[in-house]
Amino acid sequence: MSGLFMTLRVGLFVNKEKRGAHELLVELLEYFKKHGVSFLLEESTARLVGREGLSLSRLSQEVDLILAAGGDGTIIRIAHEIFPSQVPILGVNTGSLGFLTAVGREEILPELPKILTGRFRKSPRMVLKAVGSAYGKDFEIPCSLNDIVLFRGAYSHMTMIDVFAQGKLVTEYQADGVVVSTPTGSTAYALSTGGPIVVPESKVFTLNPICPHTLTNRSLVFAEEVVLRFSIPLGGRPVRLEYDGVAYGDLHPGDWIQIEARSERVVLGFLKERDFFEILRKKLRWSGTAVEE
Image 1 (spheres, rainbow, N blue to C red):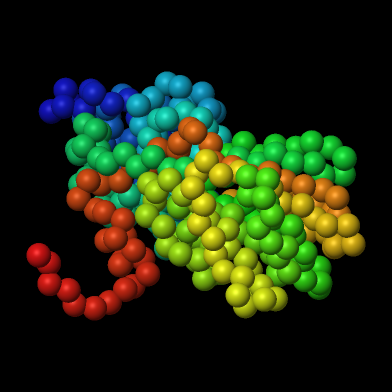
Image 2: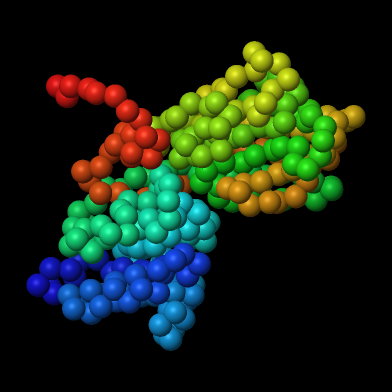
């Protein structure tokens, strides 16, 4: 039976902040040992069992699959660390709501025979990159899997943000902010702004205003080759910049940021028998009766 699992070399990451992380790690290591699975441990994961491990970036160069136990935040962190690696990340959900994880905590051991022999679905996901200027200094955000957000933060004022697409003026938003979202991020912050749910492998991204002053300002959908530029007009107020929930800093009048899709993808792993719409029905608790054709 051990020879059955020799096709994939696994990198294992367990979010130590999650309840039951150590117990799950021990179970997985016992399974790997029993079935002769070739594996490597990420460094913080390795410390949970007194071993030596590798950084995530180094791990991604040595394995065929990263098995990650945690939640959506765990998957996003790994994506940031290993990008632009094309090694699939397959998530084990040890939290509550999760759109990026493939299996639940109680499912992982029964599903491992399929996963470890490569019988899972690979889902390539768009990421955004941003370059800009703030305080007269250039900056770059190389990888955002969910979204890039400009918002008023702790400031009490409404933001003013000029938006250009391919060099053409779109509008000046007066709002609490804007969310630029990948298809993956369409079920994250963008969803709460009233943005559309986008099928994950779509080659589009969205621009969603947050509480716009003008009710006719609605979400926009752009082809992946479109480049957006945002600037804070003179006389405007500072806005906060975040990507994937990570605080980056403030933009002030005269500052700007340019956002576009990257050609490289982050690859997520899912069970073949579970499609995106099944995940939506389960996670969003959609109801209704349908007759399958």
